[in-house]
Image 1 (cartoon, rainbow, N blue to C red):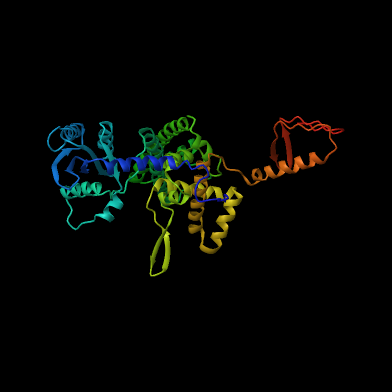
Image 2 (cartoon, rainbow, N blue to C red):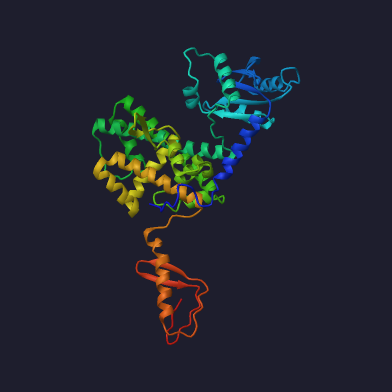
Length: 429
C-alpha cells in the first residue's frame, strides 16, 4: 500500500521515546533503591517495601482514597532506618483504580511503574494468591527488573480517551434500546415506509402504536423511546466536545482524516488510543498493540499461525474494522487488497487484514507527518516532470517557473503560481 523502504522510519523520531525509557532504566539500575510493590484494590490496597537485597522493610494496608494515599506517602517518606534511600514503586493496571495512586506518587517525586497485569501473570503466576503475596511479588519483580511496563498517557490524553470512549458507550446503549423497539415491532408485525422510525415522524408513529400493544410492551416501548431521545441529546453534547478537541491544532487528527473512511470521531479515537506513535519503533508493534497480529506457535522448526491475538486496545481494533468497512468501498487500493483476500478466505478475515493494512498506513503517515495521497495524486509528480520536459523542448525565450502546483481533476491539469513566457505560446495559469 505504501512503499516500505525500511521497517524503520526515515527520520528516526521514535528513538526519542526509547531514549527516555532507557535513561529511566539505567537510573534505576545504578541507584540504590527501596522497592515498593502495591496490590491495588477498589477500597483497600496492600503495600510491601523491600531493599535491594530482597529484605522486607515494611508491609501494611492502606485505603484507596485520599486519606489512605496520604498515609502511604507519610509512611514511605518517613526518614527512619528503613527509608534512608530513595524509593521506586510498582502497581498493576486495574481499571481506573490505579490512576489516583500513580499520579500522587509521581507528583511527590517517587518513580512509579505501571505493570501490565497479563504479562505479570505469565512471569509470576502462583497457586497461592493473596494481597500480601501479590505485593511482595511485585516488589521482587521491580527489584530484579522483570516488570513488563504499561504506557501511562498524560492527563490530557487520558481525558481525550475518556471522552471518545464515552461516545462509544452511549452509541452501544442506544443500539440495545433500538433493537428492543424493533423486537416489539416484529412481535406484532408492525411495519412502516418511514426511513427513520426514530425521527420526528417515526416517534409519532411509534407512540400511535401504544394502545395496540399489551400494557407491558407499552411500558417497554415508552421507556425505550424516551431513553433513545435522551441518549441522542447526550451524544450530540459529547460529539460537539469531540469536534472542539479535533479543532485544537491536533496535527495527527488532520493527517488521519485524509484517509478514506476515517471521519472526525474515528480520527480522534485512533489518535487518543495511539497517543504518541514514536513509542512504536515499527508498524508491526503498533499492529500488535491493537491486537491485530496473528498468533504464532513455533516448535521443532514448525511454525503455525492462527487467529489474531486480540491482546491490546479493543477500542482501536474496533474502530479500525469500522473504518476498513467504509474504505474498501471507496478506496481503490484498499478495495483491491480486500477483494484479493476475500476471494480466498472470505469476508471476515479479509476485513480484519484490511484493518491491519490500514493501521500500517497510519503508522507511516503519523511517523512521516504526511497526509495520504490518492491514486490520482500519486501520479502528479510524474505529470509535472512530463510537462517540464515538454516545455524544455519548445523554442522559448525564457522559462521561469517560480512554483508549479498541478491540480488534477479528471483529465484537467492547471499550472498555478507560475510565470511562464514562451514565444508564440500563451499559457494561462
